[in-house]
Image 1 (cartoon, rainbow, N blue to C red):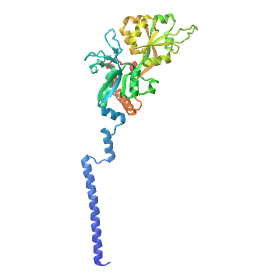
Image 2 (image 1 turned 180 degrees about the vertical axis):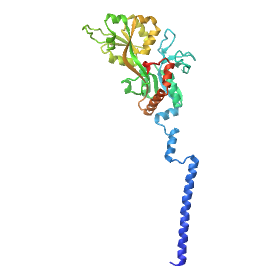
Image 3 (image 1 turned 90 degrees about the horizontal axis):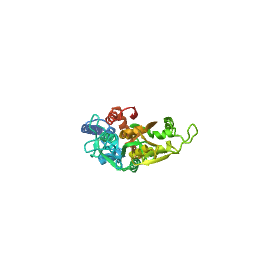
Image 4 (image 1 turned 90 degrees about the vertical axis):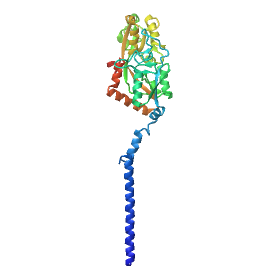
Length: 343
C-alpha cells in the first residue's frame, strides 16, 4: 500500500471511532435525561411497581370498588323487627333503628355512627371503618329481611360484602367465602324453668343436647325449640337437637311470649347477646326462664362472594390490622361488647 492509501485508511478509522463515541455519548445523555425527568435512576421494573401502587393494576374486586366509588355492604333489614319495652327496634347493640341523629347504642366515648339517618350499631361501626380503610364511600344495602337472604345477596354478586353479625356455618360456606372471625358469641338457650322441672332435666343434660332418653330410662317427649327463621340457629338446631321440633319465628320477641306461656315452646335458641336482650326487655321473665350457655362458640365473620379472593384477602388483613392497633377493641368497648365473651 502506498503512503497516500495508508494515510487515507488511518483517517477513515479515526472518523469511525469518533462516530461510535458520539453515538455512545448521545445514548448516555438520553438515559441521564430520562432519569432526570422521573427523579430516579432505578430500573423500569420499579417504575411498573409504582404504577401498581398508584392503582393502575388492581385486582378485579378491588378495581370494581374503586370504579364504583363505594363499597356496598349488605345488612339484614329491620323490616319485621318490633320495638322492645324501651322502644328500641332491632338487635342491640349490633343493628338498631336510629331516631334522626340519635342512636341508643354505641355511644361510649364518642357519638355513634349513623347511616343515612336510619340505622346504627356495631355492624355499622365496622362497616364505616372498613370503608375508611378502603378510602371510599359506604353504601349499606338493607333490602333483605333474613340473614340467609343476606348471604344470598352476596352469592349473587349484588353487594360487595356483608357485615351483619353473620355466623360462619358449613352450609353458608357453600355459597360465600367467610373472613376470619372478628367477634365470638356463645350459643345459648333460654329455657322455661317449669318445663325443666316437669321433665326432671338438669342444666348438664341440656348442655349435652337434650337427650331423648334420661339416665333412668324414662323417655323425654320431643320438645320444641324456637329459633329465628333464616338465621344460623335454624341450622344449628337441626344438628344439635335431633329428634326435637324446631319452630321458626320472624321475631324472637314473639317467641318470648310463647316461651313464657310454656305451652308452645320449651326453649329459645340464639346467641348470648340476643338472649340477654330478651331478658333485659322483660325483667320479670327471669323468674320463669333460665339462661343456659351451651359452651359452643358462634363465630361472626364478614362474607364475600366466592370469586372475590382479593377482597377476602384484603378483609383478613384489615381485621388483623384493626386487632393489632386496638381499633377493634375500641369499637367493642364503644358498643358494650368488651370482655372475654367477645374476643
